[in-house]
Image 1 (cartoon, rainbow over the protein chains, first blue to last red):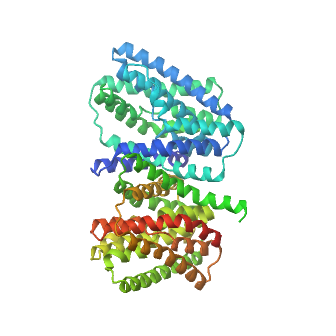
Image 2: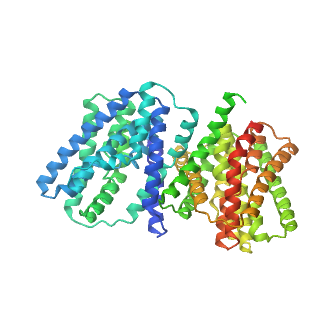
Image 3: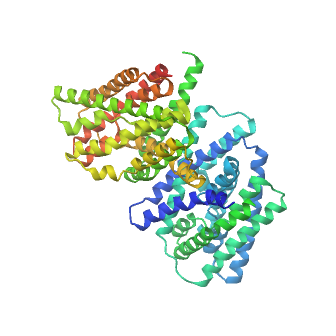
Length: 292
Length: 295
């Protein structure tokens, strides 16, 4: 069991660790460019490849998307309650609860814990999580309804194309499968190294309320994941992937959004840093619970 | 040529073309691309990981590895002699032209073609060829361009250690622990797509010059590669995947790394860029034909 846990979490630690050292030693690293490469090229290909290769049924896809939708609804409720009690502004603190690192951290954990099936199910969740971040999350930061960023996201088109193959039951041609698999290989390592660099460049600043929010987010995330998985009767990889993804820390892109809309970017950075640190420290325990 | 053959070829070369095309599109749109960062990530982290993970997936005998390694050395020796002779005949200067004529693009283009043609076994054999190329490029190639040799470069190249470890593990039949395999397999996955996209970006960004001479030299590199590849594979009596891999790797176009050195040491970078672009473009046509001949 210990070796299994190690084989699941080591890739995350090593890849993010490489990024962290890279960032701390002051070597240049264009996070924006690497992020664009990972998210605009790598991720859409990885999603298409993982969803079509394993022939994920449209029902299973809908089930995971729906389950994570429920998780997000619970996150909204927890977030709103916390914000109301702590009297902090929603435009900075609400997206922190709903946008998690479902891609860079969640996907490799799903992959190494449950194999290609886990990766495909994790991607269903990641898709839902991305759509939510780029519509609801974005709108909360912007202070107005905005969904246009969604149309610029190649992930949506890749998943749309994958759904055509999944629903029709046709296998994509080998050249397309080969190409998407190849380019998809960029996504996870680049995202993880980027995560490490981003963390190395952020500074945490005190304030007890940030720590409280992080703890509420992570414990709430784990509890909601466990409750929804159990309530829906999910089993095996589906249960594991949902529990992993629900327990992920605050998404790094929140920092970019907060900067862009002039919200409290310093606090957002602190929350990303602290929640990621706690999450990494408790990862063996989380994987033990998930794999058991 | 049957439809099946066309599809089989497409499955091998289309991923390469699309990745390069995406890189070119990336540069065309004007999105920033830090080639230096990507090259550094690939050579220092990605490539060593790819080597460790790939050798874990296949079982190669010591003879098979030694055979391809010797054939590779013979190919490089032949490239060096022929290129040197050509440069002397054309009265060109050695630091600018020798490295670009010797070293083919065995990484970004040779590895994926070998992988899609022969699976993990093909990739592992292609890595043997690639490793000599990478070591040669960063030591001899750099030394020729710089005009001075540095052993330090050789000793600090991470691929050398990765290959040494991979070969020892392979020969002793020792498996990597799961956690190292998962990590290296993940990080190794970025090598080929990142290099191909970087190649596409470079093709659009390179400033070319002296296009007649560089076109001739670029085409010469391809013809020499194909000729030497077939000759050496025949002389060594190679068969199957080993034969095909030695020929494919030898026939690759001029390496982009040659351009990087030419730029760094100001050795006619425009002409080397022309050689890279012309030989890569021509190889898009000759590669499918070559695959037809060796598969």
